[in-house]
Image (cartoon, rainbow, N blue to C red):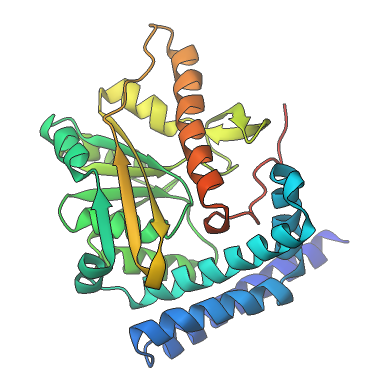
Length: 299
């Protein structure tokens, strides 16, 4: 395929995504919350069947990790994954602070309080588990919170997501944007909680650590910043339960590995945090993003 054809295809995908999100958001505003979330699940199920590339990846990755479960279990779990993500999108679009307080419960909130009390900022590590956007929003109900995120294309969709986070009092620091480094430093000076997701293969400073039995290119920002600024580290995740209610579990502050060799310490702590994410995914496999190319780079 020619370079021009590739660019045209990417442009068409971005344009279609932009208008699809606009249409979904318009329709979401007309629906009661419960019906909207149910509709999101239906939308996710439709996406499973109309997005062959994403479906194929999800099935392949689930088979890679859970090969002993069989094809029927893999297919069922992949479909549930798409349904969950469809619900998550509509939940984000329909969420407000009152619903957050009612629908999201935090277990281990005393760990948040203890970390904030140290006055050095907090690195909160999580992954794309459950509805991670609601995790940030629920934390921000009581504590100053920021998140690090990659800019999304097209820009309209990125602006919408950033705006929805802002509606839940969550500040977004976009990687690579002017002023992002200063904003990160400000997080620790202002004793804010910084949410970082480290379970995807992205073009940032990373190392290979074990993930589900295979090397995976994993961002080191969480370990690096915690060691640099002396900030306490929390690990947490959110999971969907009955009636689409959500539970956040918070652990820590964690004891980091500190040998004095910064390079080795960053790798060791990144591996330790990745193992925690892995355990959560194995407990709730239908609530992770299996269509992501987690192992696309190899040593």
